[in-house]
View 1 (cartoon, rainbow, N blue to C red):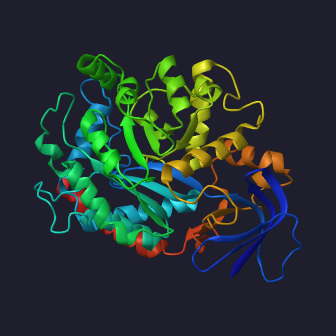
View 2 (view 1 turned 90 degrees about the vertical axis):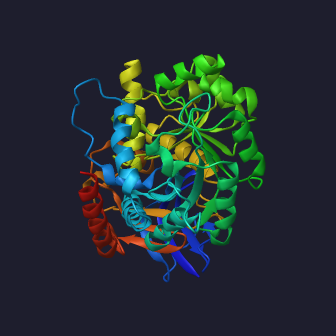
View 3 (view 1 turned 30 degrees about the vertical axis):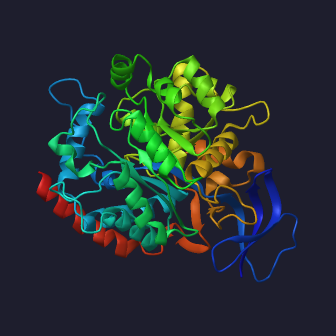
Length: 455
């Protein structure tokens, strides 16, 4: 048994003092006791938070960081960015996927993510042929998670078409090609890897890449209770294409044919109208919001304020990994709304008016459900995932409990996460990942080789 004594810990009911947390050899919390006497055998911390869930990731895209910020001859958009992404995807090897993913996971852990949902669509070899082991690349991501100590939800992706109306895939999309049986086969192949640190769900890529019949077949074929994620309404062009194809907007079209519930995560949902906002909130599905990527690609702003008012549930993801910080995602989720509405302190409820606290707790709850894992809270039976803040940093000097998350989210750019426990394992200590040098060395070699091949 291992233990931590927190002078201040953020529990589901809010900040509590003198909290003893204990966990077992399997990485599960066995005891969370507020008001406990200090234990001489326990590690001690001043401020402790539950680790954040990153509900949307394409790990290999970490390799593109900073390479797409040169203006072209015409207007740039998601679609022009995708061209470079395809060039990387065309050549990347399983070994490079593993090295890049491990680097990404180490960075995410250092900044406070302890669980990540990998929306994984690089399934085939460089020539579009199936690997001898069809789950080859997904297993590489799982191996990277083990090396870095990241809790994972793997989501092998259904990707059959290039556009609405079952348009054939382009040559650049050959590595993504899967049908329902392919995806369910990968899910089955990954079953022996499932553990407290790894869950396996599935993801129809989008309404462009999978038909409604395929989406329903995948949902019914996936083991009960497993998470399902889908890209939806990310760009206005996608909305226009859906209207032309089906006479319905994407969220409307999906909900006409699929019964959404809490195991579904609709990633982005950027361009939704009032009717869709209300229906999505009623469904119990999670809106997966990725503000740094949505800003980087010029996608637009999700209507957060009416979604909160309607009782909607959301979480955050780093998607293309222009940032690996949950603080930056939460900050820009709020700041985008302030710019849109020209007012301050948008993300709150009557019950929780502290914006930082509301954002952290709401994103935790939505992300935990989207991950399908026992995470998101510091309570017995959940995974032992927690963050120890750097109480020696000036930003936390003399603060009271009500001010802590406001300082963490909205006060400067220093990373205030000092130590990270993930699945009962200390993976970050004094701001450094415990395998940082070895992981970084493999990443550097992979990125040198990959960039040389794609230039």
